[in-house]
Length: 85
Image (cartoon, rainbow, N blue to C red; front, side, top):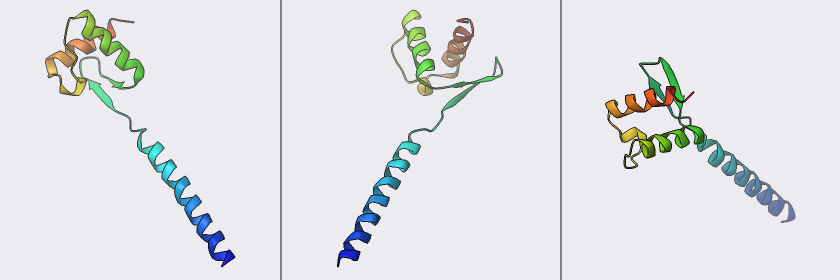
């Protein structure tokens, strides 16, 4: 009986650790957008979101997820973004 409980505890612990690894690694998906005019990719991470929010504020736009913007607005953002450096 003691061995059964010990084995069960090991299985539960292994399952909990495996679940934590799967949850953490599942959140690391990288989203990139291709900028055809500048021939580069933009990684959509915290830094890019800050620039995007600044662009929306400076151009007096309502907040819309970048993925839902039309191609013309995405092009405007990428041009603005490249002029920030």
